[in-house]
Length: 70
Image 1 (cartoon, rainbow, N blue to C red):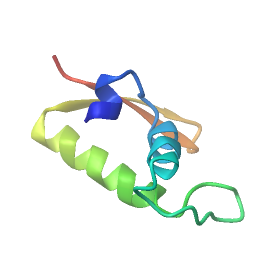
Image 2: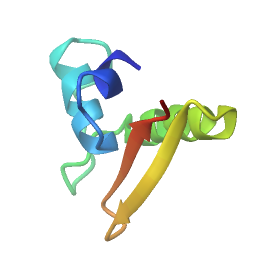
Image 3: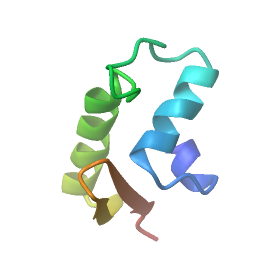
Image 4: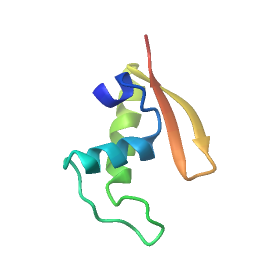
């Protein structure tokens, strides 16, 4: 939530920040997408269901954009 609050809206960017902070694995798929992307995406989707985060767009099946509901 703090990353969304600070302006990060991309699930992929959130993954990269979490990797930098040492909070998720640095392992990647051959496409260079972090292996923990699915886990981060799942958490963001659960926040959408709770109504605290809003899904904005799916960027060509490569990334998803979210924002905090105010």
